[in-house]
Length: 161
Image (cartoon, rainbow, N blue to C red; front, side):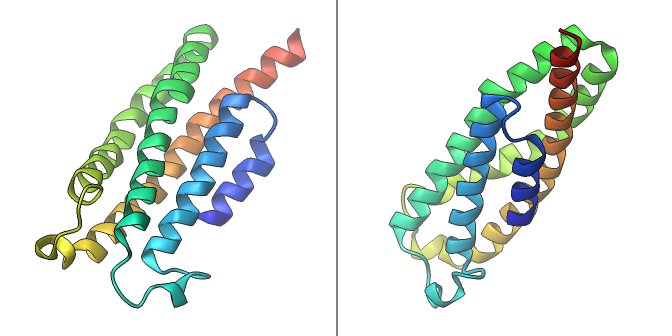
């Protein structure tokens, strides 16, 4: 996941502020996820359940990331698709339902764990965090297709201007 965001930043960084900000938020989200899941280089931090503060921090980053995507980047993509033809719009329309699946999973995770990690739901935490991580990885791949479309269309505009 982290390597993908670094590649995305290298490829599309500096093209649009909305993309830069979104990729920065993605990077923060991935680092927080790895820390929460006890993945390298944070594996030594995770011998027990993560603290509620770490869970809250992750859930806040997750909600910020989802909001930025939906209300900033996706809006620009839809606007560009309207300007640049039906092929871009068809791509966006085909990807949004797939992205929505991970949105629903993320919202459920947030609702379940952001306020309070009870002993009743702590047993499922690792499995649900893992499922969320897989969904986020798929989401990032889909979002990268949208970013690529926005980037290409933006580049076309700046080279023809």
